[in-house]
Image (cartoon, rainbow, N blue to C red; front, side, top):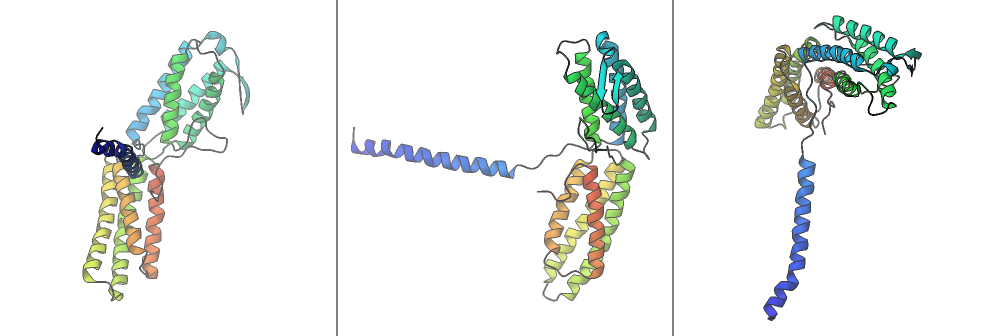
Length: 284
């Protein structure tokens, strides 16, 4: 073996280690840079369809459920009840939920009642053998109840103190329109602040005001898309992202009382939008 070959061979482990370190660093950076993904908010039409599906799947589950299980006793927070009677009561509450869900009313109270009963039956079914009649129908019904819970910002099983809460499209549209108006007022108030601060270069002032124009535009776009019943989680995320940039811009400035008031109003409305879409008001 030549001395050159020995040197090359000896160097290989070191290079491999360096490559491994570089690869690991890149992998970590890629992981850190991965965007946060949120589930898409269901629009009113989607929720109505989901409620109809819950209704149909409850019927199929009861039809296929083992007769012995139907006559057994279910124990829940409300006491003991025959499973067959429990399912009849659930059917009645699902009917109320279905009838009362309207564009102007999200039926949150009715959904809460259904999810509480769904939680009781979920606990009961979890104790049954895997091969009972109706097991497949229950899994499908359970999946739809879980989806309904997500649409109303809760999880199945429902906690004792939890209540379902949803803002329907009309309510979100109104909030987004108010945000657009508030963003316009804040831009005017912020511009007055910048004019007083002579240390702010004109180019900086124009760039910051342009970002505030974008804030108003993003809120208007969200209102339009929600109002048309189209998927709108992307528009909500864009508004939250833009707000984060505006916070960075305004942080070093001494805002006037008027600007502080208008921005406070914007943050309050933004928190409602974030809640409607299941997103944090301040994204990581």
